[in-house]
Image (cartoon, rainbow, N blue to C red; front, side, top):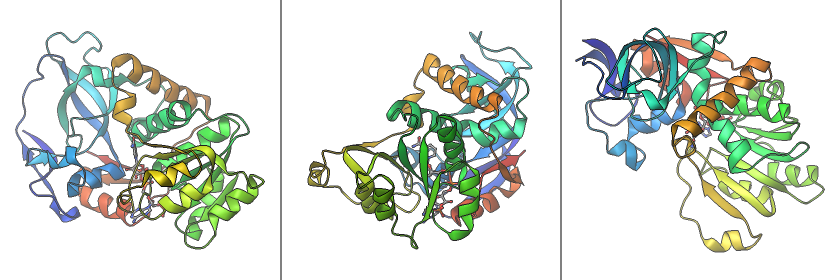
Length: 327
Ligand SMILES: NC(=O)c1ccc[n+]([C@@H]2O[C@H](COP(=O)([O-])OP(=O)(O)OC[C@H]3O[C@@H](n4cnc5c(N)ncnc54)[C@H](OP(=O)(O)O)[C@@H]3O)[C@@H](O)[C@H]2O)c1
């Protein structure tokens, strides 16, 4: 048996139950990982609530969680990518990282380089790989370019600000409260505006001489959608990658026609879809960590059994950095 956090029903943080679950040996192509640290991501709250089709399809009771790191303690048949004792990490489906130990597809894991602490890996692999595909592949940010990034003090946003600065971009961060401005600036954002206080689309147009920006990275969704569109230059890209405030209501194509905009809703799993893509994505992130350009902040650690508190914390918009669970 191993101990895990499972949901029996979709709902609030109180549905996260700490309990014993049966163990099994790794199957073909899997490794067994003993977790040392587990990443907490906003997406875990969507899974807990059953917000998206893929989480509504979970067979319950289900262990949730998309990110973990630990040590390989057994190999399933056919696994040559890793050896017992390797330090590995993952940020992918199938869900189930909120546990002491689990089996996971070897091809969806990456080897953790020496010199990166366990908690830092668990706090940043999913968020860092997300930033990698967003700023290097969905829209390739150029030195000097002005781009807008939402939730600039949060987990993904903190890493994005630092990476964008390292690329030489002029990142504009949007935050939900004035007490996050200082941290967002420290994260590398050249300008930081407060949603609900500042007329940030007007300020973004001012900053760009009236032109607007080529890309807005919006993970907030419903509350910021309209204003994000207003920040864009003609032919700009509206890059939706989250819905922390709720889903964007159905969109009319005419809204895009006005400025010939490009609209996309992207997911990490579709940008790390095979071993080569996954390894390249993780390697790029590990390289910015090794260079010191990106320093993820572990804001808070919770015992695995306290996962519900971690969910309350992230849902209350209190994150200024990353959260981890320690099994
Ligand atoms: N598509 C992908 O590939 C992918 C991968 C990773 C993460 N994501 C998404 O990226 C976003 C950030 O993830 P994260 O794990 O780093 O979380 P996070 O940024 O630490 O926390 C979410 C942030 O969203 C903002 N927010 C705005 N309205 C909110 C509301 N009504 N309730 C709660 N939060 C609200 C808050 O920042 P402010 O108070 O500053 O507004 C909050 O701190 C999430 O939407 C997540 O689902 C997407």
